[in-house]
Length: 391
Image (cartoon, rainbow, N blue to C red; front, side):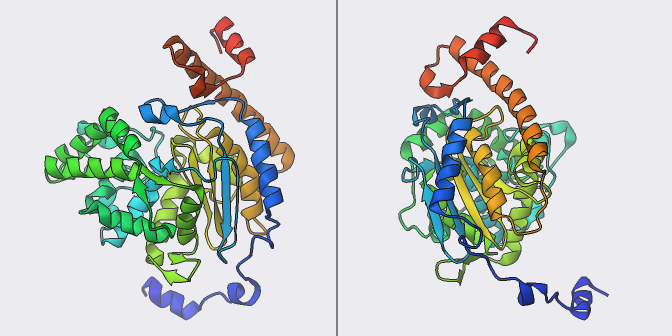
């Protein structure tokens, strides 16, 4: 008996129809007052962090800007923060949508990348090791997997139109300064594209260069937190644009994308951060070195956070703090998480170790002559590290 036949025989659960309705922000005690409180708390907790330095133009952003946008599937939204109106470069937040675009164009998930979360950073992949004889990248949300997704883009304007529909904004554009800066500086991604050619994944260098160029363009798209929220709500609703209930993508494809976000959305920190911010529930999220993090609770809603100050793994420090209470508000009743004491202990241990790692990197930035405008540091911790090499 095939699974389709079995499911038909046992029938659908009646629970969702009898007891469950899609909650509103008001049902979940989400208001401008509560989100403003969370914004203020996360700001105070962000005592360290650094701007992305490997993309020169990202060093010019205002490190003090923050924003939160949260919405339900009834198209109710709350947006707060002094960075809520600015255009932010999408960077890796675009990866789930590149993957979704490729799936919508008929590419199978298996032809794009594997689904194995890895301990490796986002900028590398096992496919970079020829001796392993791999044909596809490890995961669709690493850089190699995202460049692989770009094989589906034949005309970049078509991808812009796709994102415009998801975001409900017909004025989506590439931030030219970001694109030029990233295209000229990121030789690592070009090497990934070349390796995908050498492995036989791409047919030739023309296809590889086109994928690399389109990937860089996609990362350079400018969007507000509300734009990112609108696109995230399409995923949360299973492919439906919530403002008019119009289906934009296949539900199966959104499920595949969100599953990928569960396992590697915050890269090698995904497991630990998931425990901190959402407990036993999957943390369906995606971060970016531009400072955005999108977070989705399927069938309920989504939120987007922004601050460009990053930790050692390229995740926004502010956004990780804000995600704890935001996840708590957006979770359905019955979602289990650590109690307050357990959460506080885990968070303190994480913060202590992460703070040391970031401050060590900041010391390197200072030695290289970087301006203090690109980082935030605690002078006491800097002094402590300089006088204690064992830290």
